[in-house]
Amino acid sequence: MSNMANECVSENLGDYVLVRLKGEVDLSWSQQVRKQILDALGACGKVGVELSQVSYIDSSGIAALVEGFQNARSKGGKFGLVAASSPVMSVLQLARLDKVFPLFASIEAARAA
Amino acid sequence: MLCAPLSTAQGAIGALEVINRRDGGLFAQADAEILRLIAAPAALAINNARLAQGLVEQQRMKRELELARKIQKSLLPKRRRGDFPIIGVNLPAHEISGDFYDYFDLPDGRIAFVIGDVSGKGLDAAFLMVRAASLLRWAGKGGLSPARWLTDVNVELCKTMQDGRFLCAAVGLYDRKSGSVMLASAGFPPALLQDGLHFEEFPADGPPLGILAEAVYEERRIELGRNALYLFSDGATDVRDDARNTLGSDGLRALIAGHAELGPEPRLRALIGDLKRLRLVDDTTFLLLQEPAGRAAHHVLEMQFPAQPGEMRAVRAALRAALDAQEVAPELRDRLVLVVDEACTNVMRHAYCGFCDQTITLRLSRERDMLAFEIADQAPAIDPARVRPRDLDECRPGGLGVAFIDSLMDEWRIEPGRDGKGNVLHMRKQLTFGEHE
Image (cartoon, rainbow over the protein chains, first blue to last red):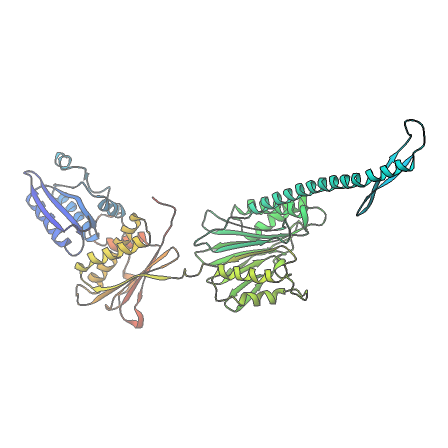
């Protein structure tokens, strides 16, 4: 999993935008991740970030997620994390954010929320 | 009546008598000859039977002594291989010994140790040794301070001690993290601290155990560091040379100094060899406390890289591999990688302020179970007071990196770099093995 290429792709599912993240989210490209999340929130009130293929995330990546969460809340939108991998969960726990973000096991569950 | 001696090589063991011939007549000279002929093999047979019986008895005794020896030996702790800082040796002068030693782990990670020497020899001394050893172990399990430990055991032993017997003992606690030993001695020969060719002696802190119930014991702190601490029963200094002169404390020091360049285990083995070439007259027991050789800090990883975020992926991979080689559990490994990454990117963002023509140096070393990280830059000096962890309970982006460092590491600090240039972040993390999540 650690040799995976970094990738950030937004998928429009009608009433829902899913941002798929892959690879190691660190300072070298977390600004790009941040922009993509904020863009998605600009286009749609319900955004999820899919994290099952993320093998590493640092505090700048976490910060991008926190910013998305706060942005959605301020506009009355919805923001959730989908299928967070265990490296991501571990960092969320360390940052005590695992109880802050809405976490969903699947895209279906996230869209239904 | 006829009579013939039952003679053996060691003299007569009895006589063979024949009385009152059945026909009422007198015994003839020929009868006497026959009796003498019978007496010789009879004496031999009786003698052999007695010797055989004695031998059986002797062997039974020997078996029982052997059994007693085995029981005594089983009371001594098993030798611990690998990274353990205490080695014990017991050389009994006879089948059974009045000496013993013991060591065991306390729940808080300190190591408790005991060495003792019962006065007198033989079975009763051996029995007292068994009792004293179990009493000392039992009392020491609770992690009492050494002085209190001796005081409690002394009171108990005084209740039952007989015939002027007593026990010389030393007990202590060794804290590997701080490298210090707390030691208390009840009439035991002085402990010897060796720093290369230099020695320091620590005499007993009170009288032997089992004499005076009111006895008071002191304790002392010894900074062991990398040095060696020897505890030995008086058998070690009572060793005789060919001219029957005792070795004494000076002689023992000279023997130890002769092997100063060896590691703890080979040094003790060489010392025992020396003593055996002389003549052991009494039970001899050694306890040697020293951190195993080659366990000093060693470098695990050192790398210098451009202060650019794009470098971090390769740095993380290298660090991950280095921590795997140190057998750090995966969960902790990933957190350490995260913390180092955070520290490096903080340097890029805040110390270098985004200018990336400079480098960062990452060093990882290990001393026993302590990992030490060093992250050095050449940026203008920063004010360490301004680098603080934020409260994790507030939800906001940014500022998490220092919080991660603070929550994971046992210790961290920022210092000016060598020759005043740049900054060095020092971080330490103690590994705890055997607590696999």
